[in-house]
Length: 298
Image 1 (cartoon, rainbow, N blue to C red):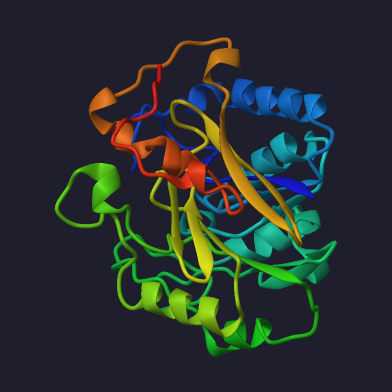
Image 2: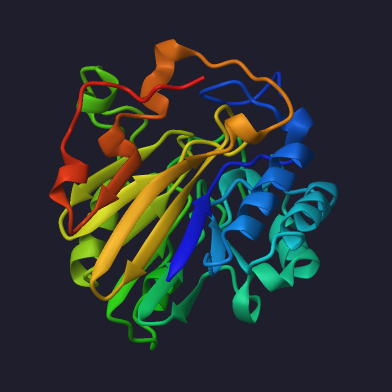
């Protein structure tokens, strides 16, 4: 089974405002999604796509409709884990469920599904005092409710298990950034909670987002992965292949296929990461050897 994972497309946002790690090109959003559609047509072996959240820059009806147009054109099913930017209005949750119910099995934003022998669990992170609503004036402290923890215990048995949630599972390691401390770790005790969930449910993989940076590190028993922002240079996503004997990932960039030019800040090349941050195979240790050399980027 193969699937792609991307995050932080921020549809409807501004290129001149908002958190970003590299140049944002939302003015060319249609070109970027058209190229993703072309790539998927050329790779029909991909079974589905998972979006790790912040599909829209704000959870308005107009932005959700634009997201629907872009993703409905893709030649594969799409599943969504809502991010903080997707929930900026008090009725954003209802709008998502009304406008794009096809992204949410059984009209639930916390859900599980089976693909072959692999169970996928998607949970919406809460960021403030109110569930399913993000107030930018509040400190961003990700958390799950008791009901969401219970979701992980329900039915659906698979030989392997993947958890998807918008918050990053950990900060970028010092070896990747050259800094003295992990970069952009989740606030509060979220990292500890995810580690406990990984051990309790024998998770193989935790997919996060939010930091707009590539991460691929092992914290037994699970791989921890985040993706750079799909709307920022070099417009990347992850390709996964998984079965009962194999789990591997590579990072795909669309930058050379797009009909426009974009700039890149090489002082922040840790965002894209070293080869070991961009690709791994659990059955091939050579792909996981750390390197001090960053990727060659435009």
